[in-house]
Image 1 (cartoon, each protein chain N blue to C red):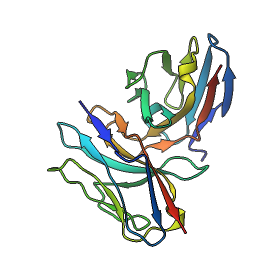
Image 2: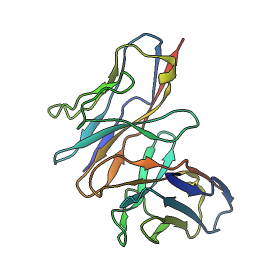
Image 3: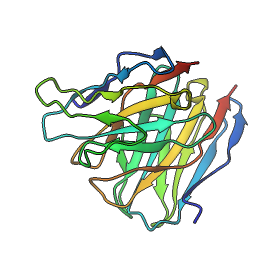
Image 4: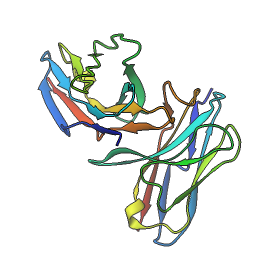
Length: 113
Length: 108
């Protein structure tokens, strides 16, 4: 089992460009999450999907959109990238909607010039 | 508002010394709390959760509802404990909120 897989691992964008971060899990988990990690700010929740067919905003949703394509996949889209979105992005999943351990991907390092 | 606070960005100790990483939370309901760890070049992974009340790699954490704290402790730090540690709070709506993280550096 691969667990949680994110692509791409690294990406450099110019301001205004768009891109989609892909995430897939093979653990049959119900809930999936997108976080960003910034020095001194910790992990901040961007969006999450408690179950297939639902998505909700987290702490820092502005500038992002998400799609829960099916139970396995949860993508994060930047429509018009800004330098403030330079960060490391983590996808995570867990089996239960309201409780339990999160399993993380390896992270995607995004730089916006 | 739901919030997790880790007041120390960096904690540096010598090998064999006790270590305590602080975590305070703000939550009106019954909290579910976790500690996650990120070793260099590895994924974030669960270290322990308050429900299980277990000791992992010599670490323990006790939920203190009166002080709204969930501090992580280890009596004798090892060099391999050097990592970034995150405290996290699970709310009943399915959100898992993380603190700012504490980098633990254990010197030989």
